[in-house]
Length: 134
Image 1: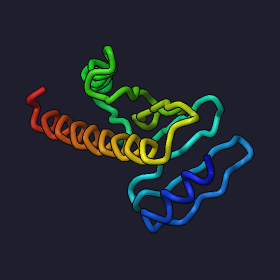
Image 2 (image 1 turned 180 degrees about the vertical axis):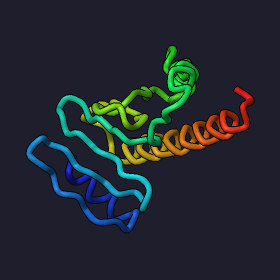
Image 3 (image 1 turned 135 degrees about the vertical axis):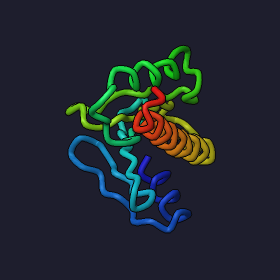
């Protein structure tokens, strides 16, 4: 697993993360996005914060986003949820531990794209909410 992360960091020209005691790496993709990679054989889990949770009309937003979780439509097999403290919308993805590097990199790229997509969707939702369209 570490070899895949090391190669990815080299390609992305980012710092190589160290594994903590919970077999977890935090990969800084850019200033706004960190991806946590959990090394839990027989699986690899990716987790990233989409955006800070809104305070008003929270239930409406969650219902809107949970439709994407239905039969993995709209999330590429990832799951939208809340952070443990409820402050962030998160995205979680599971992949096989024995995955080849190229597929690992492609799935991580898709994962980041889904985070960016849902970040944009929530921003649009907030704009509509502020305009009282919702």
